[in-house]
Image (cartoon, rainbow, N blue to C red; front, side, top):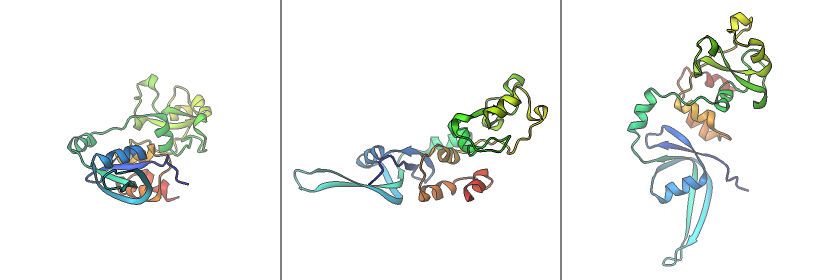
Length: 197
């Protein structure tokens, strides 16, 4: 049985990842003639109605990765100074649902956003100043820096690039989609090491 919840990776014509879409959006782009090319595996072969004149039934194949037409010049300019929006689901995914103080894995309900330099001390609510912490460690650290609280930070926080952020937003990422996204990660990305395991 085909899982219609599987996300499709949409890119611009140059192959830069843009977003995750569902099969309905992919079919809409197909009928609007917005698909430049397709990559990856065929996820769905969807059948439409029968043409009254030709008596042919329409069929649309939806691949796991589709490149679309459109002016991406604005997106390229945006990406040079791009900072993805900070939200807890992406933050927890960036840190692999690991408390960066005690080193244990937790589910999202047991995790919180910790400001390495506390907001009360002028610390910004920015990717480079926040880490995933379990509720217990976050409460213990309170309004102190890790040094003052006697806690060691296990990894340095980083701002994800656009391609890394697309990865962090993905739900069930297929192998061909993952390979495509990884090719767009910076060589120095901490996600490379994590994805080896």
